[in-house]
Image 1 (cartoon, helix red, strand yellow):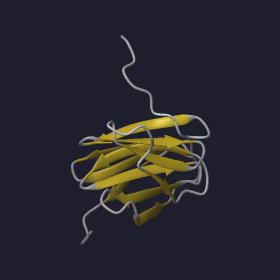
Image 2 (tube, one colour; image 1 turned 90 degrees about the horizontal axis):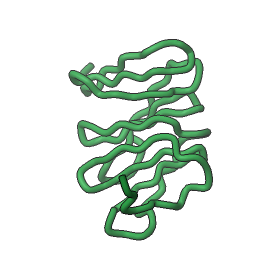
Image 3 (tube, one colour; image 1 turned 60 degrees about the vertical axis):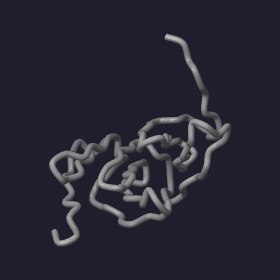
Length: 122
């Protein structure tokens, strides 16, 4: 295949990419998440909330979820870009995230998968 577009703006390795409608999100070892609009040449915003490298992303339920070397998972509002919730419990870097059946699953270098309830009443 042939590359049709390049998004550049992180100061370190890009580790994960996720999409939400027309928006693209990238997670980096520079401890930021960048939001991209494919019609714009530069990132539309940078999300800062992790204390270390960001290694995993997923999107669903009107939120962006991110995990990283700081051992936490953050839930971000897709609208405001603000952190809604912090999920703590891993003892090492969060390496993967997936939403399924109304729950968030996070994999970690601590050799565990945690299952998080997302419902407000849970």
